[in-house]
Length: 151
Ligand SMILES: [Zn+2]
Image (cartoon, rainbow, N blue to C red):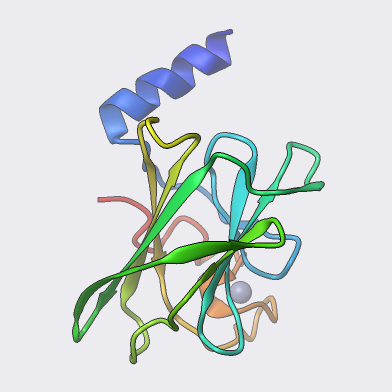
């Protein structure tokens, strides 16, 4: 109960965003710190965004009533990607705009009318030499929590 209260207070004060280490997603992406089921952010080979959901034990669950919005703050301008449900996961209909190193904001709502939790992912699509993961999902100590994971 105390944890729930703390989480609620953090949501109210911080608009849900806070610096913390990055969790490795089961599909090689970045596991967002949203309320379970947690969303994993993956950029696939076509530069399309894939969102999968996992329960507290990291077992995959189909995306149900959660609503996810992805906003690319690309050099060419802000672009909101449309996500469609495909076999229980969400896939963007269009690839991410050209460029590397810009921020992608992922808004996760537990349901259509719920307050969104916002996560900012610095889109570095290279592979990290330290953890061998995609840079945007890097779990190395010196990167986790050090990037623009907040306002
Ligand atoms: Zn790394």
